[in-house]
Image (cartoon, rainbow, N blue to C red; front, side):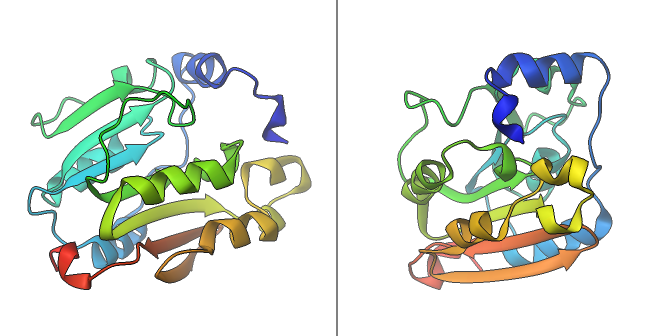
Length: 195
């Protein structure tokens, strides 16, 4: 289980620094995200667990003003240089004092992160509190039941999925191979999405 990770910054920092890389972003995944997120029009987006910045750079290419967060400084330093549209910050989203502005984000993304969040209900409450009405929370995660037993802890269970998908205005789930992509829409007027 992921419970053995007591210090996420050190744990992930050591893996990133050793050259470890994770499932690359695919064309099928970005095409699906593009359908749900639409053009950014300069609106704010936040990529939680940004790693090497691939997803954050993609969001910037859609016209979002993107901040990439990672709990370890090792990951964002590996990000490819961009056009300045992505700001990378070392910050643990689960820390109660994380300095983020209030209800400002049109889009939150969490790719291959949700299974590792310790207090999922608190995390989701914080995300909902920072999204504008009609905002989108995009989650990509493996499902524990589809993984070999020794890797099941990097996926989410049915109970985790129920917590994830409750209390949203609209929920869409799409399977892409071993990954499930969730488009979770905040309650609010669709006009606020800029679409």
